Image 1 (cartoon, one colour):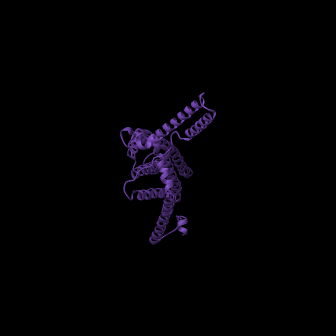
Image 2 (cartoon, rainbow, N blue to C red; image 1 turned 60 degrees about the vertical axis):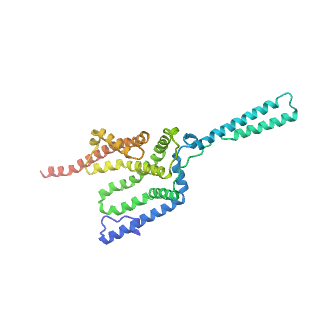
Image 3 (cartoon, rainbow, N blue to C red; image 1 turned 90 degrees about the vertical axis):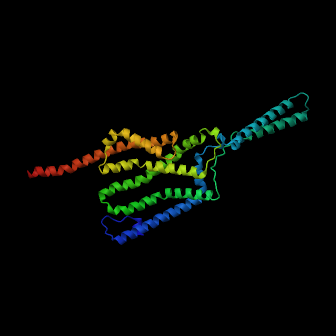
Length: 330
């Protein structure tokens, strides 16, 4: 239990059996964290499905849903009719041939009609829901959504268990690099997933659902719609690991800041290819997916310049003592 709560030290010596036992224990805790997260997500599946349905357009704004889109127009017609009736009653109440009792009754009727007309909503905000095909699709789709969110919520625990198992093989200097990377990886992933949910998905879904909608009877299948959303969030979350990947390449000496600066055109082409390979091949989704990658590329260039500068200073500092020793010996 103590080994699961804390990493093994670099100086500890374990046998192969001890390493396998530690791996088994950490895998058990990973599965336990996934099971707990899945139970919670399945319990709150209504909230998760409602959050995913947020990107869908409202029925009043979808021209293809003739039956549902007729509701706001019928409500508007009823509202207009009530207001016209109220105006007619008010006009009759002002007629000279009407008695006092008839005038009073017409005024009360006009007031009631006006109040009823004002209480009717002009455009009821009914949110569209995806459809399911088949007997078991609602249940299986709910399980799939709960599983994806369980993986997302259990990610910090999984990252920690991976770090704790790998860290004994690293020396203290390598550990100083690995620890910030292990902390930054889930944070960047969550930032990328949140960016996809709040920035990319709403305009992308609206564009894809509304394009040429007057020519189609648009029905959104739950399985494909949720897969599109989840894969988009996962893809952008993974793409947000770009700074860590470039930093790792810089650490092993494969690239430096000058390499990225000289080849920025090729980097932009590669970003365009990656964005096009993500879910949603339309220009709106691809553009929204490519913009943060360009920003991350620029931030990575700045980060690598700082890393190159620190590496140069460290190399200069390490080269000074041997030079002094040589001078003293001569």
